[in-house]
Length: 183
Image (cartoon, rainbow, N blue to C red):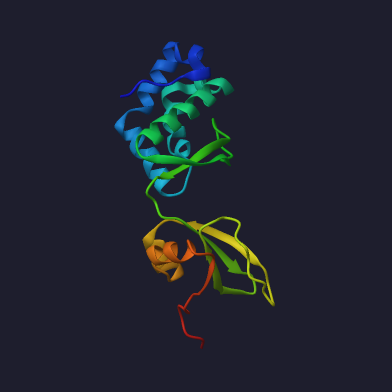
């Protein structure tokens, strides 16, 4: 277990609670839960809320303690090969109402948009806000951030590696094949 870089949380970390929380977050089961949540595109903290409440009860409810826990989780995730993707993801939960999302540094990612007039007509991009081609009918609607090769292939009908290479040159359209033939 590495040392926690407490920065602005020196006072909170110096308490028995701060030390105990750091030790708890570094347990292999807790790390495994955070990594699994991150691999599924969910905030790491979301996977351990129940365990934190069970172990520390209302001691972790003050905002300053929750912020320290967030910093601790970020340091743990980054040390394990993950990068911070976005902050303030709403959880609508207790004790955390917002958390950060992480992904593996080496993870391939594309952003998927669908034509609202034809859901099989998709735009695949390497950036979240691409230059959208003009449509005669409908508009482009964000659908998903695709990081799983299986989900890309089975759910959307494209090869993620090929899509990443093609999207690096600019957004491109993909027509998803029909799953079932019309009656």
